[in-house]
Length: 43
Image 1 (cartoon, rainbow, N blue to C red):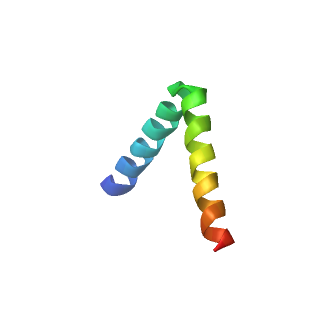
Image 2 (image 1 turned 60 degrees about the vertical axis):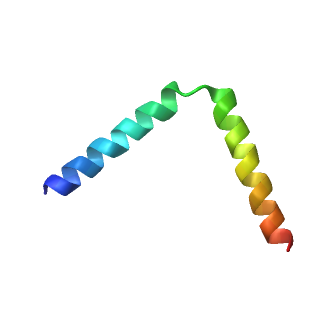
């Protein structure tokens, strides 16, 4: 039960961190991930 509680806590912390993170930073990371995925799919 404690493990489930700590996972829930970590998930809420991560969600909060995503909310306060600069949107442009997230957008750049997303573009990078998409470009890497596209390269792998093209092969």
